[in-house]
Image (cartoon, rainbow, N blue to C red; front, side):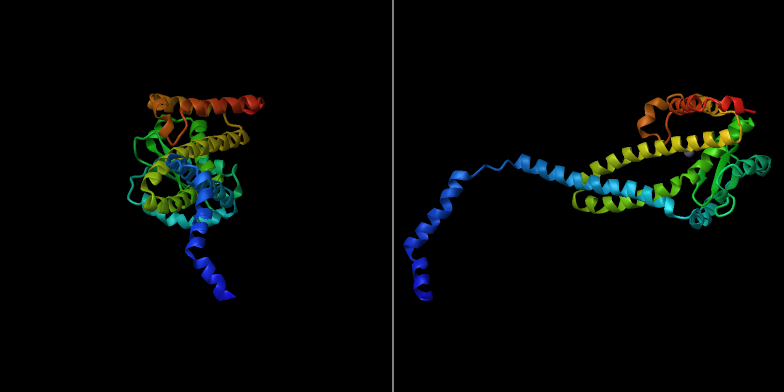
Length: 283
Ligand SMILES: [Zn+2]
């Protein structure tokens, strides 16, 4: 039985018959493939997957960082000190500012006096700037302190930097930067053009995240100042001075790490409107 079946299937007639059976439906139902449509589908699908992975990197890290105890951030302190080593400091100004800085620290979560004690540094440079370094170090320049001689203005600047620690901005930035780098690496290897385009998107998106973090640190500073019964118009005076120092900031808004001074002033004004009793508690 097996041999007979094989002979029948192998006959010239049956081969022709099978060929007709196979080719007929193909000839009728064939839909010409559109290479552009196929490419579009592939690019859209690939981009969708990459964007989902990117969102997981950004929001996943932001959600996980608060679970890291602040004292663990102390591992970055030696790196920060290495960076500061050899920089010209101003010990007199540093000493003069210390009592106000300590008063400020008593109005923020206790962890920043005990688990991750914040340390103040004054660098002797004519720059209108201050920044915070992972590991608990806050740096202000003499240029900023000479411009803002008022206690409330200086405390706003320092409270803003404390805000970066309190909101865990450094760790979020580090974690997000590292995870996005790991995501971009294989894309850059296998599809450099897509990697380049995606890299540009990441750059612009990171700017948006950075600006949002700056506003968050401003908000933290406003809340702290309110607790301390300080003048909440002091930040407005600070931002007006920033505007004078950087008059064309609107032109670089899309690539700047900080929001424009006008946007920051708007947030202060919105805060004052939402907290109408602030003026009454002012010293
Ligand atoms: Zn900042």
